[in-house]
Amino acid sequence: MVDLRSDTVTRPTPGMRAEMAAAEVGDDVYGEDPTVNALEAEVAALFGHEAALFAPTGSMANQIAIQLLVPPGEELLCDADAHVVTYEIGAAAAYGGVSSRTWSPVGADIDPEQVAAMIRPDGYHAVPTRAIAVEQTHNRGGGGVIPLGTLRELRRIADGAGVALHCDGARIWHAHVADGVPLTSYGELFDTLSVCLSKGLGAPAGSVVVGSAEQIERARVIRKRMGGGMRQAGVLAAAGRYALRHHVERLASDHVRAARLADALAPFGVLAGPVRTNIVPLDLTKCGFDAPELGVASRDRGVLVSVLGPRIARLVTHYDLDDAGVDRAIEVLTEIFRR
Image 1: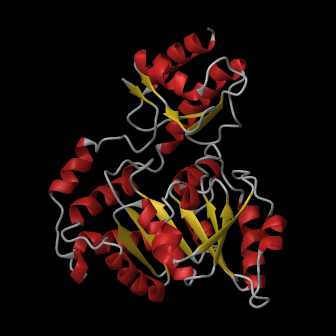
Image 2: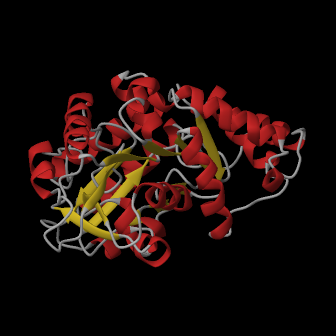
Image 3: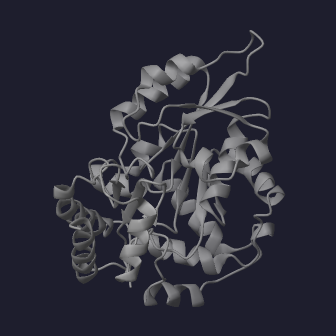
């Protein structure tokens, strides 16, 4: 079976498993797990921030960061396809009492001036804006990479309005590899970041919240309140540390394989946009079948794809997918689209 549903379907490599088995551990709720502490220090340093906090999931990491930046009853701005408002089951409202307002989905092609025009100041009996969130790379935006210049302009706008800037950096490693932007250059632009270890990097679980030392102290309380306090979590943190050493630069291979898939499918008019990283977005509006039908037809031929909507599907490359798997996927999908 060739699995193109997500880069979360990977399994730990033998080297990663060995480091997990040998990890030195302690009780992380007491701050006594040395492997967790080492991971947090490493990730904070990678982004040039003071501190970081290991969390079990990317959704929790995002929601911890949002609660750090936006008090209950106040406002977060993001795009309508952002993970924080699309795939996190209303957590910002349910856990943080946060009001969200969105701009029209444009993936990575953000217009900073449009965002600036949406910011609400204090007063006037309106909900004040406290933070802006962006997603790097953009999942539903087909793995698009927000240009560094756009992010710098958003930082300027946020500073001028006195609001914070958060990065949902679940796949920021892909942006780093695709554009060559240093992680510290991303880190210096954001008040908080959440970065995922269990997507392209292939760890079995875990994300990290990055921020100031004061923010991370508060984040520990929020994590505990949300049920995210773990005990001997070093076995998971070890996987993350291994991934950071061995699985970042190899993401370029995933990008090459995604481009191969896109090139093969381009003649059928099904690409929803350019392919920059490891996500190939498909728009089946002009096809004679819908996304669920594609999902069934490809599964019956041994290829799994992600169905995101009636006419929207997605292919994602990852380290468990080799060139032979890409060849098989191209064979199956082109056969289906020729019908």
